[in-house]
Amino acid sequence: MPRIEPLAPPYPAAVDQALRRWMPPHVPYEPLALFRVLHRNPELASRMFSLGAGLLGHGLLSDLDREIVIARVTARAGCAYEWGVHAATLARQAGLSPEQLRATTETDAAGGAAWSPRQAALLDAVDELHDTAHLSQPAWDALRVHYEDAELLELLVLIGWYRTISYLANGLLLEEETWAARFPTR
Image 1 (tube, one colour):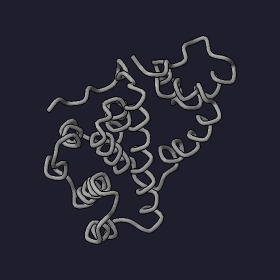
Image 2 (cartoon, one colour):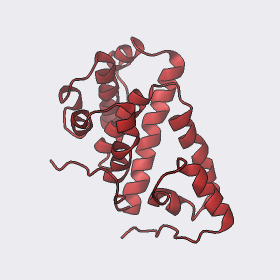
Image 3 (cartoon, one colour):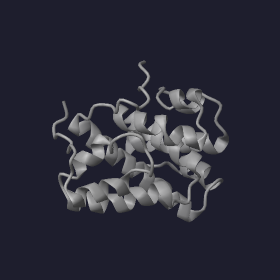
Image 4 (cartoon, one colour):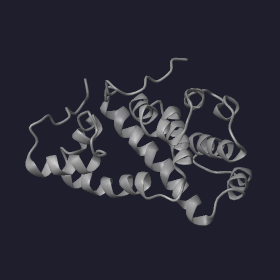
């Protein structure tokens, strides 16, 4: 049972319109529970929408790189809710294989699947930031080989954003969406 109950239809007109913006068009399921909880505070939801939508739909990182990072951040944070939503939809659309998705949940993600050097650098950066809240010079240098300054800034924000989303979903005790991929058991 979530700590704050998600809104249920019928939604007030303004909330209905906002939730439609948050979901891709023609999706066959209700807006995510996370979005429906956030709309208990519409002003906060509105502020969060700008950054979240910008990272997902208008970012400089490739869809594949973005989804590798999201999968690893949410896995390291133990956020089955958000990991499952992305694993079922955007990660697969971006090209992550089932083996790669599973590897993002393993202790040594970079060694758990066939990753390119660029992808391994992403995974290592997520792990370092998760463990220490710092990025060592070798980890930074490994990223610099593949990314420009603007992309590196976006990468750091993306990692932090999905850590925040993980804290939110975990703190609310959100139950996994029925259609989401199941977080692998270890």
